[in-house]
Image 1 (cartoon, one colour):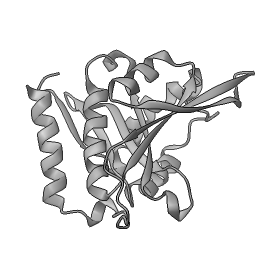
Image 2 (cartoon, rainbow, N blue to C red; image 1 turned 135 degrees about the vertical axis):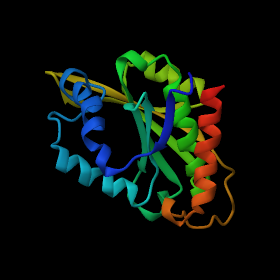
Image 3 (tube, rainbow, N blue to C red; image 1 turned 30 degrees about the vertical axis):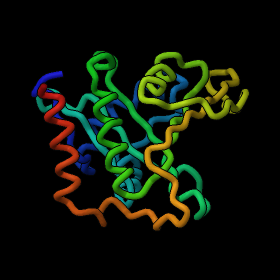
Amino acid sequence: MTAEYFIRPAVTGDAEQILEIYRPFVEKTVITFEYETPSVQAFRERMLGILSFYPYLVCEHKGRIVGYAYASRHRERAAYQWNAELSIYVCPEEQHSGIGIALYGALIELLRMQGIVNVYGVITHPNEKSERFHQKLGFEVCGISHRTGWKFDRWIDVCEMELRIAPQQEKPQPVKALNQLDSQHVAAVLSRINQKIKN
């Protein structure tokens, strides 16, 4: 990767570009279980819900968004608050450029600062490319749900992979929303990741 790549926090004004990356995954693959691409407005609202608590990052190349990643709640009950589910989508032509590693690296650092302990990837199975990507980062398979989703006239398995990103404390502090963190510390994480991209 070169200095032409730049990772930054997403804003709702990015929704249209992000949605164009997401659209083919909805319409042509089983990577997402959505049947229809959401409207730009619905997608903005979805982004706002995530941005209210979790990191949502985009990677630009020459001013165009070519990939994005975000965290979301893994399960609803309070006892699961120290977990997060990660999602990532990258333009096909950029999928071997290192964008995914950089986006996940930044995402995980920010989540660790929030107090998240475990992160999860939920992947349609088989998906060797995604499974290898997660394994490269240290994720391990923790379970497979068999024939759990129906799309394109067939039943599909789902693999869940996990990674512990911080020590488990006997009495963990409540997880902080991203906007509760020191903005300078957040900026320092992104600056460090972007410096690695330049090198």
